[in-house]
Image 1 (cartoon, rainbow, N blue to C red):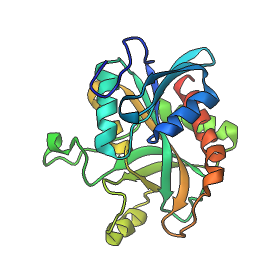
Image 2: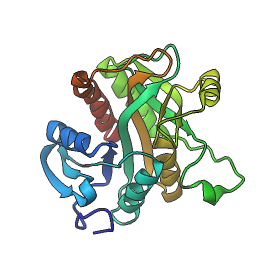
Image 3: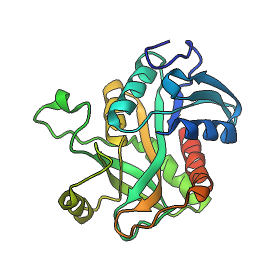
Image 4: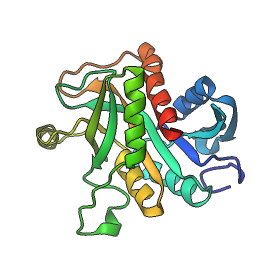
Length: 234
């Protein structure tokens, strides 16, 4: 048991999927895992452990933003022995070729600031995904016939962004989409020698303003969860 995770030793698997929304963790666990067991509800941040195709899997909510994810990822790795951490979440599309409902596999994650920035000081560290996970996820996405994009994303440290000039530069430099957690997850995985990947569903588009209706989100997000699970155990 840690400050933020009430699970006992052995309750958390080495493979952890991390949606931001705790209720998405509940939905994913009940939909995709066999015999899911609630192992954490401290501060309402739900976590479940069950099995998928015979493999033990934990699905733990991370909250919104890099500071929140950093808390859970640190405790999962340091105190519970997590080895593979895959973020499953939504993002905003930034390129014209990226459409709502598409899947983005984040090869790299740029950011202005993260909880780890103080460690690097003047260094602009480049957080990246685990190559084996990225490759396996690409193969799984192709098998599912998912419209998939692989490349760089932007992990923003604010939700209500007022920097249109920065967004213009992200688009200019090929950034596929924007979310709020992956850069810190990739940095922590590198620090502790773990595997990490972000598998993201495009829920809205910054350029067109199109957004996925709420009643269609679960169906679209299911494909993302399947890709993440298949990648983890390929």
